[in-house]
Length: 100
Image (tube, rainbow, N blue to C red; front, top):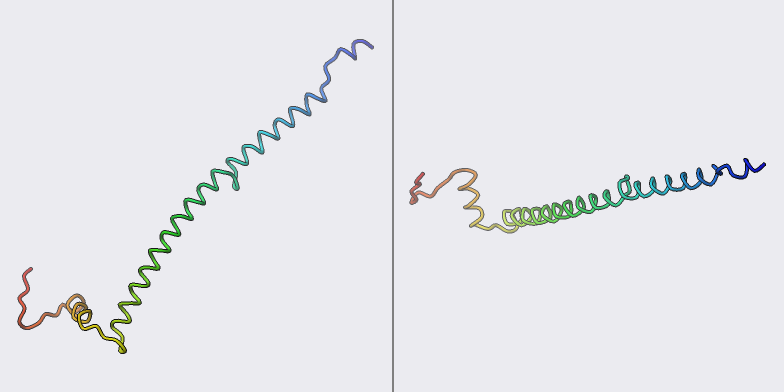
């Protein structure tokens, strides 16, 4: 019976090895996984980029709305109309000289 008492117990060794493996797995998943720390940093950086693009597009929409209003029937900006006629249609006044 003394041989059975002196033999190493495999149960506790397997339990602690399994617990250690599970701890390593969950730690790795918390850092590298789909919902991990690195993914969170990547998502935050992507969010900041998208917010910057959204703000830029809002400014562009505001600018275009202003130009549209300035060329509407209710409010006509003659300077803007002259600029658009020159840029889009290539028109010039009769007293102007074009140098290319």
